[in-house]
Image (cartoon, rainbow over all chains, first blue to last red; front, side, top):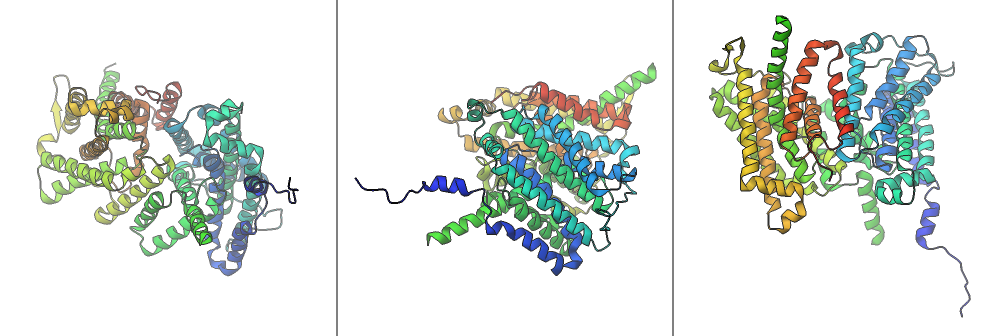
Length: 331
Length: 291
C-alpha cells in the first residue's frame, strides 16, 4: 500500500471552487473605462451612452444569458425606468439617486407582475408575449401624452447635483462618472448573483428545465425573481439615460431598443457576464464610426457584422477569444 | 342608424382588405416557422423587395400591373431560394438567439440597400386606371383597388388551401410539419421541401408587399416597422397552419381598422391586449399544436 503523499481535489472540483474568485482580467473593463475618462475627454457623451447600454445589456444577460429566457421586450423595463425618473423630475423630485431607486423599484414590480404571467410559457410564445407587452406599454406611453409628452418626448427635466455636490455639466464629466459608478455597483451585484446558488439554479433551468422540475426546484419562482431583478437593473439604466440626457423620448420603449440590446449582448457572448462589456462598446463604436462615414448605408455594415457572428462565431466575440486562447495553449 | 351601419360596412371592408394583405405576407412565415422552427424576423424584407420591384417596374418601365406583380413574386421567390440554400440552412439547428441575430442582420442590410437605391421617402403605388376610382355595388360604392385586393386575396387563399390539401407537395409539407423525422424516414426529401416552401413563402410575401403597398406604406424601414403585426398573425394563428393565420389576419385586420376608427385615442393598444389574451389562453395559437 502506497502512502498518500498529496491530497488534491479533482480538476473539475478545483475549477468549480475557484470560479467565483476575482481574476485580474475582470478588472480590465474598469481600467479601460477610467482611462477613457482621461484620454478621450471630448467623447464622454458617447462614453456615457455606452456605459448605460452596457448596464442595460448586463441586466439582460441575467435573464437571457443565464435564465435562458429569450425576450424581445426588455425595453419595456428600460423605458418604464426612464419615464419614472423623468416624470418624477418634472414634478419636482429632482434628487437623482432616489430617482434611480424609484425607477428600479417600479421596473421590478412590473417585472414581477408580468413575469408571473408570461414565464409560464416558453419558446416562440414567450418571445411574442414579451414583445407584445413592450408594444402595449409603448403604445400606452404614446397615448398618455399628459404624463409622458407623447410623441414630442418628455421635456423640462431638471436634475439636482448628485449628493448635492456634483452638478451635471455640459462636458458630461459628471454623467460619465455617475454612469460608471452605477454600472460598477450593478456589476458587483450581478456577479454575486450569478455565482450564488440562485444563479447556478438559473443556469440549470436554462440547460435542462425538466431536470430542475424533477429535483424540486421552484422554476417559476426563480425565473420570476430573475426577471424582476433584471427588470430593475434595466429600469435603473433607463433612469440613468433620462437623468443624464434630461429628456425622454418614446424610443426608450421601442422594439428597436429591445432588439438592439439583444444583438449587442449576443455579439459579445450571452451568459458569460462579460458579453455586455465587449458587445456593447464594439457595436456602439462601430455604429458611431460607420454612421459618420456612411450616413446612408451604415446599417449594412452592422448587418454584415451580425450575420458573420451568427454564422461564424456562434458564442459571440468572447467565444472566439476563448477558442483562440485554447488553440494557443495546445501548441 | 344609417351612419352606424355605414361605418360598420366601411370598417368591415377596409378591415378585410388589410387582412388579405397581412395574410398573404404572413402565411409563408407561418409555414416556414412551423416546418423548420426558424425564427425568421427578416420575412418582411421579402415583402419589401416585392413591393419595390413591382413599383419600380410600373413607375419607371411602364410594365403592366399584372406582369409587375408576377415579377415581384418571382424575384421574391428566387431571392428566398438563394438565401435559403446559402445562408438560412446553416442555422436550422442553431439557437433562437443566433437566428434572431442573423435575421436582424439581414433586415439591416435590406434597409440600407432600400435607402440607398430608393431613398428615404415612401414609394407610392399607382394602381392601373382600371383599378382606380370607385366600384359600384348595388347598395353603395367601394374603392376599386381595395375591392380588387379582397378578391385577389380570396383567390389566393383558395389556391393555397387547395394546394396544401389536394396536391402531393401539400401532403409532404403537412407531413413534415407534423413530424419531420417520420417524414424523412418515409423518403420525403425534406431538404428540398424546405427550399421550395421557403421560396414559396418568400414569393407570397413579395406578392403581398407589392399588392399591399397601398396599405402598408413602402419605405426603407418596412421590414422592421410591420414586423410586429406579421409576427402577431403567425403566433395567434398557430405555426405551420394556413387556416390559423387567415383567421388571425381577419381578426387583426378588422380590429385594427375598427379600433383606430372608433377609439383613435387608444391606438393599437387593444390589438396588443387581444394578442396577449389569446396567447395566454392558447399558447400555441388558435390552430397550432403543442410540439
